[in-house]
Image (cartoon, rainbow, N blue to C red; front, side):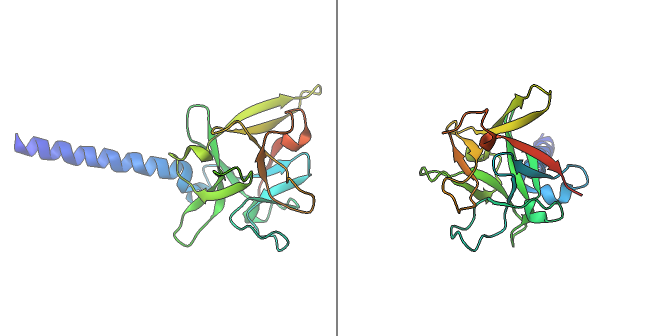
Length: 186
C-alpha cells in the first residue's frame, strides 16, 4: 500500500508540474512558442501607430506600453495574444527580461491610467482583457480591449506630446481611439 501512495504522490507532482508548464506556455513563455503562435502588431486606429515596449526619451515613466510608428521588423512591437480565461486574453511581449520572463500589459492599480508592463502571470486579473468587436458598414471590423478589473479600455495618450498607451473609459467604442487592429509580423 505504501508503494502505491508514493506512486500516486509522484503522479500528482508530475501532473502539477505539467499544469504549471501549461500556464507558463500559455502566458509566460511566448517567445519559445513563436513558431506555433503568431505575434502581431497592435495598431490603434485613432493615432495611426502601434504599441511598443521601446523607451521614449520625452516621457519618463518606464515599464509602460508606448506608441511608435508601426514597424513589423521591430520585435519591441510584437505582441502575443494569450488566453487567460474563458472569455479573457492577455497581451504578452515578444522580448524577455534578464530572467527570461515575458511582460504583459497590465491595468495598474492606483488610477494611473497607463498600460504598465508586468511579469506575465495568468493569475493576475489586472492583465486580463475581454475583446469587443466593432463591425463597420463595409463588413470590416476592429477590436476593443476592455480591462477585466474596472471596465476601462486600451486607448491613446491622455495628453498631447506623450506616447503612453492608456487604459481609460472616456471615449465610446465607435471612437477610433478605442479601436485596435492586429497587423501581421514577418
